[in-house]
Amino acid sequence: MDNEITASKERINGAILIFSCHRHMNTRLKEFGLKKNDYAGWKVFTFIGDPRIAEPYQRKGNMFLLKCEDSYIHILKKVALGMKVILECYDIEEGMLRCGDDLAFDEDKMIRFLNSPNKGDYMGRVIRPSKPGLKHTDNFMTSYFYTHPQDLLNPLNGITMSLQEMMKFNEIPLVPFASGVVVYFSKKACEIVIAEMDKVSWNIYFYNKVFGYPYVIEDVGIGFCMNKHKINPVHVFFYSDYPQDVNNDNPTVFAYHTNKYK
Image: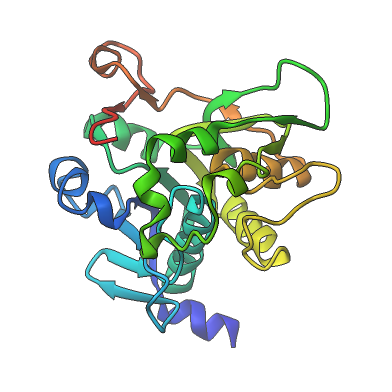
């Protein structure tokens, strides 16, 4: 039966996943992104969340509306659901490239990476903990909502707490992780992320007695999932916050993170 299901899917080398939200549909999604829907057998897809829809997802061309909260704090859930949908719809040969919605790409450099052999399972700009320990206090997410209070009121975001209540979700694990808006995952790594989210019933507020709240910051949460499976991130600069880095001779930097319309 599994072979019949696999045979009915379109086989592709991989998927490039662009994650956005309703707030940026008329800004970032119109101004940035990729010009084509296919690069070297890697198809491009865009994802937005909407908890109101009845189905797990709705599709229009290469855009998916996922049944999930559209907020920043839920982005790990959105990313994992995006991976799950693509694995359900396509037979993936290699893996997926997770991207943000405010990137300017050097497409030739990106294609060179996509065509490169022997990719790791989990690749990106690696952050390693400077101090040993099981968890630490990180107010990154609370600081974001402090400067974006309107996000707490948006019903599409599905946030039912105040900023003060959100402050308790500031304990996160000390693990190495691939940070930021461009990360590569092998098919195996995608399956691990999905399985780990299944274990916590897709609840990003799940509390781990030893490690705190691993899933409230996406890149930390994914690093936590990879760490549980003994997969270490491979350090590669895929993107930079400075456009000159994309234009120089660095062979790996293929995207400029504009940070526009924050």
